[in-house]
Image (cartoon, rainbow, N blue to C red; front, side, top):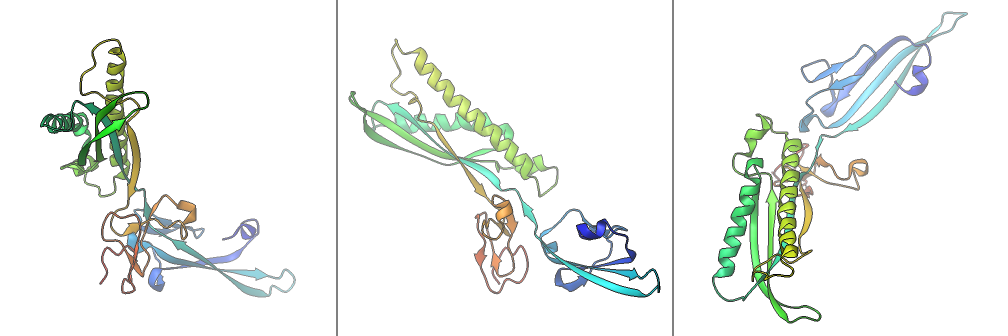
Length: 272
């Protein structure tokens, strides 16, 4: 019912809801229609996406002749399943080193990774794709120094992560909260390394120490299979992972749905 009708008297009001695949909607464990014609949906899943049509019928009755006239109005709604993106973080940091030659850089990298893993293990988060390279760096008004350029990614999908979801497949709220906590802990750790360097300003500084202001972090979003972002089609929810429409699919955790003319369903995870 539109706003104009809500302020008017209506006679013999009836509603007919047609869902995706032109099926007439009746009450079930997921869908219900109120006495005033509101469609209520709970536990919305990908296959429920699509065109919903409400046909509203009512009568107008002339006061003098009691002549009745049936009026019909149609309302179309496109409804899409969506979910929040899964967060992960790409991080980079630098440490000075005595030389780019020798085994000590490898040992330092192994120890650093173990420290970071222990920091976030209780959050079901993990360090992935860790790497480092040693470079010669010329700092203005200083000599050339050797630095380790370290990069890694943090995600909330360590082995056993689903136990935190209490049996639910839709727990991005929990995983995203965990990854935010992991990001904060890692940032605090490297900040503590900077503080140690400042305290040692007038003392001997270890050959391997944190390079101040070198910590950088970038959030990376991913969508579950069958979902993707499309700012042009869903501009009112540009950051959401929206179910892939027919004609598209998403087989992995990419952020976009790919073209597939043989995909005829919402939320396709493969291209038949």
